[in-house]
Amino acid sequence: MFEKIALTGRVLGVLLYAQPESKECQPLLASLADPQWLAEWPYEGGEQAAALIAEGLSGGFPDMLEDAYQCLFVGPYALAAPPWGSVYLDKECVLFGDSTLRLRQWLRVNGIDAFREQNEPEDHIGILLMMAAWLAEDRQAEVLSELIAQHLLPWVPRYLELLQQHAEHPFYQGVALLAQITLAGWAADSPAPVPTLELYF
Image 1 (cartoon, rainbow, N blue to C red):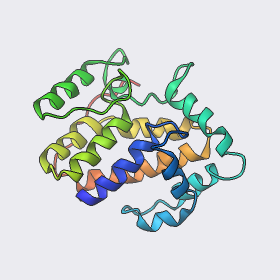
Image 2: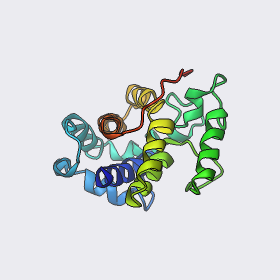
Image 3: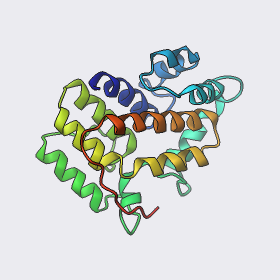
Image 4: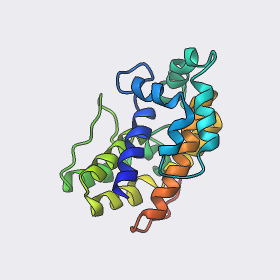
């Protein structure tokens, strides 16, 4: 389980956090352009996702990738699929909501320092996926299970559904689909129960 989460969390975390032109993302994009990578992916059923990702990295689509990232993750207009947990879990659908504060307290108790490039909420999907990868690499089983069950799985399926629905670029449609398959695998492997929380977005 650790190896699976370490690999998939790091890849998906970077793809859903870093700008396509960034030094973190560029090597991944080069690797994903050839669908052969799917043979190394530890969760089955990703053929359609791999095809969409390859389509998004070929033809004229790469030129539009940065614009698609800007539209989905930055703005300036309202985001159709906000990548922060508190938007879904807080009645007011705000950043830095109660769920963010609970996550922040949980991080403090467990001595975890969230990696962030700027002053943004810790409950960004990309940050949480990379955090899961780090905990898996460190083989912190109990803390990893808590992170996945309590702070990821209650809201991420809804986020990924919206991302796939509103991403007008095949690359991010494919990434959303791949993340859905992968997180379903994480959920199946997770020993911790996932609470059913009300979603507001």
